[in-house]
Length: 305
Ligand code: CP
Image 1 (cartoon, rainbow, N blue to C red):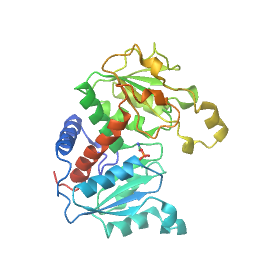
Image 2: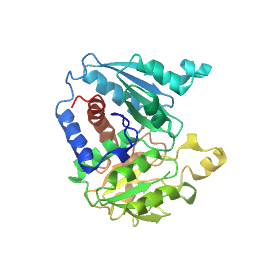
Image 3: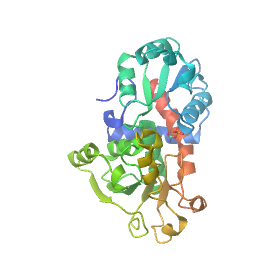
C-alpha cells in the first residue's frame, strides 16, 4: 500500500513476513557484507537535512556491494538553492541513478518523490514523519539481542512528538504484539494521531511522565531519543525541555539482564557518558547493524535479492 514500485517510503506497505524476510536478508549481509551485487549500478544520496549514520551507512553499503554513489550532503550547494523544485531535482537525478535515497525536512517529501520518480526512492527520513530504514535496523537489533520480536516491553523515551524513528517503530511493530511505554515531558508526548494508530491496530501502550529506575524495571528495550532542536519554532521551549530525561548508569542497576539500551543517535545529553561502558548499552552496535540492513534494503529496492 505504501510502496510505489520498489520504493520504501514507510513500513505500512510491508507485512510481518516481508519484515522478517528483510531481516533475514540483512543477517546474510552481516555474515558476508562484501559482495559485488551492485556492479554497474549507481545510487544517488540526496540529503536535504544533515546526517552522519544514515548517509554514510547507505553509501558504505553501496561501496561494499560494488556500486557507485553520487549525491549531496548539503542542498545549499545544489540548484535547489536557486529555486529548483523537488520534482525537477528528482527527475534530473533519475536520469543518472538507478536508485535515489533521500532525506528531506518536509513530511511527505519522500512519498511525493516516489510518485514522480521513474526510479525507486528510499526514504532516509522525512521531517518528523518516518524513518523506515532506521526502524528496520532497530528491529534487526532487537531481534539480535532479544532472540525474538514478539511480546517485547519497549520503552520509548524523550521526544516522541518530533522523533520520526519512534513513529516508524509503531508501524513496524504492530505485527509483533509489543507493549509500548511512552516516557516524555508533556510538551513532547506521542501525538494523538499516533496514539490513535496504536488503538486502531491493537498496540498496547502506557504513558509515563518520569524516567526512573522503577518505571523501567520491566523493560526489554529502552529506546532513548534526542529532543529534536531543529523542529522547534520556539527555541525557548526547546531550552526548557531539552534535558528533561537523562539516563544515568545508576538507573540501570535493577533492570532486566536482557535489557538493551538503544538510541537512533546522534546523542546530545539524554544518555550520560557513563552508560557507554555498561554491557546493556547497545547504541553503537545498533548503528553498525544499519550497514547490513541497508545493504538488504538497497538490493531489495533494485530487485536484486
Ligand atoms: N539515526 C540517524 O538518522 O542518524 P543521522 O541523522 O546521523 O543519519
